[in-house]
Image (cartoon, rainbow, N blue to C red):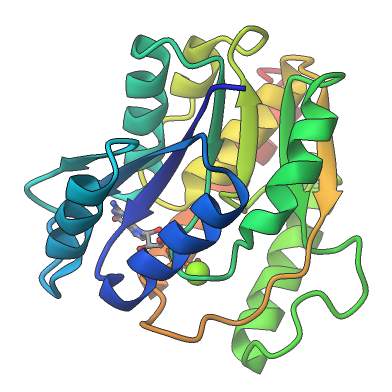
Length: 236
Ligand SMILES: Nc1nc2c(ncn2[C@@H]2O[C@H](COP(=O)(O)OP(=O)(O)O)[C@@H](O)[C@H]2O)c(=O)[nH]1
Ligand SMILES: [Mg+2]
């Protein structure tokens, strides 16, 4: 089966070859598109090195940090133009284990979009610092209470079937940062797409550091309020 994996990168030098090896160990036929936002740590050289080694690797190097959400939208758009039906998105930080892709593909046949869920397995986010676990759980709870969604909507480890999902419905998620994930999930869920979730364990990042800043959390909160208002006024 022909498919494309979109991986956004921002200063992930140590993680790039690791994720590449893990993916190609399981899927010799994978295609990877890295979207890098001008990493200064040598990530771009790593990506170029892999592309020289394997023509299934491609990349887009953007001139500045345009955001993870914007990287996902661009990657998906390029994937669709390259005529990929199945497009998978994942982080480069080592927390998204390619072994789950097998189950994601099993589930996509009967669904439009497959997400990964950190709350279905007990202790699936073991090893994370307290602050991180707290933020993740509170965010999940708020989405459930205010937006009425049980989905684990804030993750970027997903598989889309673009024979069934219309890219325009994804583009409606305007946020270009981390809030893109919650926004797109809520929009797609409300649009009536069939969404399935695979339980995953999400180990803590080992190499490099999180790119999520306080301002991202703040925007995430604003997104929640915006959608809550839309929900109250029946606009979604
Ligand atoms: N291209 C691009 N990638 C990003 C940006 N922000 C984060 N990433 C990448 O998106 C993935 C998830 O980011 P991460 O910092 O691990 O976020 P966290 O998991 O929420 O802590 C990683 O592969 C990052 O390198 C961005 O602005 N642009
Ligand atoms: Mg991460």
